[in-house]
Amino acid sequence: MKNRKQAFTLIELLVVIAIIAILAAILFPVFAKARDKARATSCLSNMKQLGLGIMQYTQDYDENYPCGQYTINLVPSGTYAMRWRMMVYPYIKSTDTYRCPSNINKGIDTGGATLGFPDLPRHYALNVRFVNNGTPIVTNRIDTPATRIMLAENAAGDYRTMYGNWGSTGNELQMQWNAYNCGTGAPQNGQICFPGHTGFMTLLWADGHAKAMRPADTAAPTNLWGAMNDSPGTCTTDNYAQLNCTTKSNYAVTSMQYLQQAYDQ
Image (cartoon, rainbow, N blue to C red):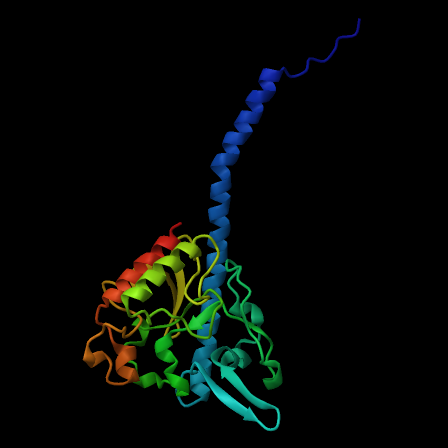
């Protein structure tokens, strides 16, 4: 008689399946973290490229940073908003640089075709203290450029962040609501929600360097954003005073704590 090959028993198969399931449970989170680390590195590289582009812009435009936006009147076609993303695009020349690989939101700056620009993702936005109502900020008027946030990650809402512009109890409660929804990938108000990279957000500073930080650390012990609505009068005399303000803001601390909760989910 021919010897029949011995097959696995049901118990042996179940043991193998159980081992595979245990290994998968251990390794999948590791793989997910490694993937997000790679995406965070790509996001940081994007910020560095944007920083280089902005620094080149300042050299060509008399040491002025790009402002938030200004209006161009093209007769007879109408008026168009020229935003900071468009201003620095000639130095970037890539729409992918404006896109964080971890950010699934699809918001873009449209309307640039008439001005000769492609649609640009809104994944990075200008600190509201740099907007200055269409008037450029001069580089030498910033006291400590290396400690002043210029660009931050954005949920694809607008050309500017709302970081640094929370100013009432109502805004803090809205921030708590936004932070909760950030964790589920469903941003509210479209400007201040993004789940980030394992608890960190990517930032660009006024001297052109890029760095990732935990949101809560940007508000305390030092305020890195500029004046808030609860800042003292010395921080509100003009736009440069607002931009250079380092006084601790309770509004910023509370709001950033809410945002950190969303990032840590």
